[in-house]
Image 1 (tube, one colour):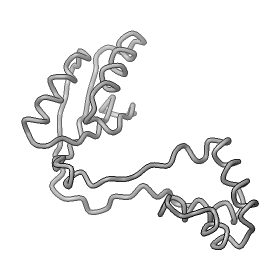
Image 2 (image 1 turned 90 degrees about the vertical axis):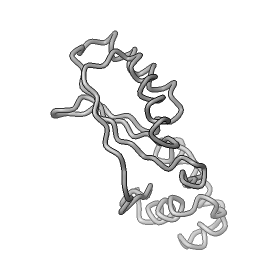
Image 3 (image 1 turned 90 degrees about the horizontal axis):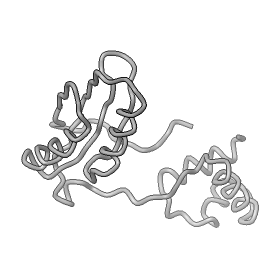
Length: 148
């Protein structure tokens, strides 16, 4: 990846509504050359998708929860069941398999504590060993921009 592609990506991840013409001008290349580079980056999987980021509070989803999950079943069948359960819960935004003391870390957004309890009840279908939750009081930094 060269500096022109980095510049295109940097601006695309800040504002995905920029036109190809705007990106071409920023990068100092023609529109067709810029479009070809964007298509190449999409084909390579560097650009996975273009989305609209929303404010969860404006959508009445003001409680962000980080859920630490431990399991005592380290087998493929359980992992597939867990994956299936978390995929089907709309409030779950991110799930990571971890190294260290916690097996999985989940980020979820819900309306309130009863909303978290409803999500937790759905999560129990995965036959969990230990679950603990931490609630966000204030977001000090939140970005989707990767350092290029």
